[in-house]
Length: 328
Image: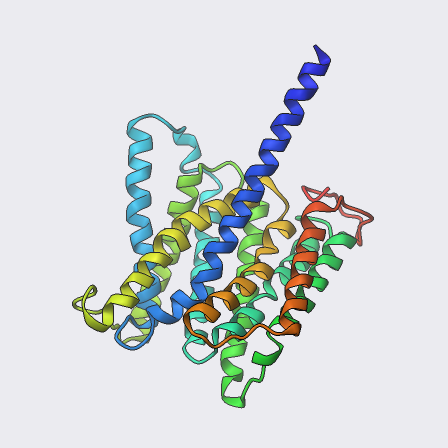
């Protein structure tokens, strides 16, 4: 009897780990393509920056609203899990993330996708130290080592694309600010949000982000939205917007929130090291601007080594003595 129970527990753990790995891979592949999609969306003939983001989140909201209504009508979810004491935290994290994405889109108007990716890959490092400082998770030796190895890999991968002219310094600053905001949003999400229904969490997160970005669009102006989105020069930006909305927002964020709930923040945030590598491959296929060399291959190996260290190696001695939450 005990042996059977142990086998069932082992099977459940294996299934849970498989789901986490599949969610991680899906997020990596989807978000690895969004760097290129953002550039296409806000290119000539497409959408101006803030309307592009606002439409992305608003379309996501409409789909999520139908999903929530269906769940409520079919009594598939507990209403107590829709709006509760966690809701203000969800709204706050959504607003922080929305503001950060506005900075990211603005930077991608002048910064190449590879450089944007490498600067944004500082978010996992920032998140690790924020989480440690706020006692959300302890800073383990393997987490720190894995993050440093991955960051070295990112630098190697994009070594030939990191020559920043003085006029691009402001855009780099925006990307660093976005990394900090992204890390802050995820740390707050990990610390304060755990019980809310997944659809409700997404709904309030993107509602807050959409409201904030529409406000920014009104303040910054002017707003350019193609009058015939599926014709001529607007077709490619519109397809990019759809890609950013459905896979890039609805699917990827749902999977990422699943990762935040079921694994440590440090493991989930290693996505920030993997997606730039995928972005390079996408650029090589669609923009023909990236040629793989020895530095890039070594960089990819370092990234995979660092991520593998974070995900698969058992935790070792911690750098601080705060209580371990989930990275143990």
